Amino acid sequence: MHSQGDKKNNLEWARLDKLRSVTGRTWDSIAADLGIKRAMIHHVKAGRRGFSEKTRQRLLECEVAAGIRSEASALIEQELRGADLVSVLLQGQGGGQSEVSTKDIDRGEKEFTWSIVGAACLPDIPKYSP
Image (cartoon, rainbow, N blue to C red; front, top):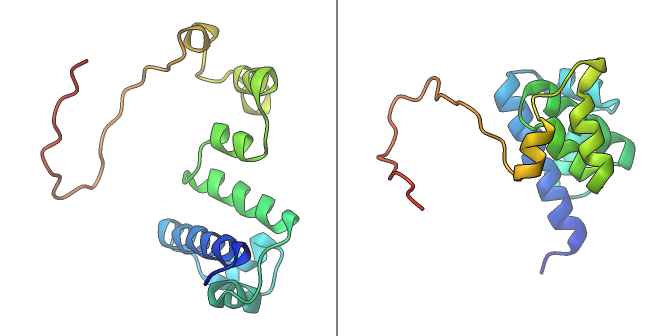
């Protein structure tokens, strides 16, 4: 039977593995960014250890920088909610404006254009019709 800590460590390992596969960086480089030793990554993989809150925050920042996570999901993970979350999203990063407008918030949705890059084979995706 797995404990709650084991599940948390498995999630941490999955996040690390995804960061490495998306960025193509070495474990040494990732460990340096997280402020840990490379051996700690292997302890997490084996389920023997978990990250400190500080290291989890650094991992989150690396995921946002790599485009794996959105700024909004990072803020939600940090338990920023309601008016505080809306305020941060509207202010954007570095004093610039976010792409989320008050109109989007009032409607409860954000329209955007997307494209798939580098997908060699995609299944047929049915069209959504309400």
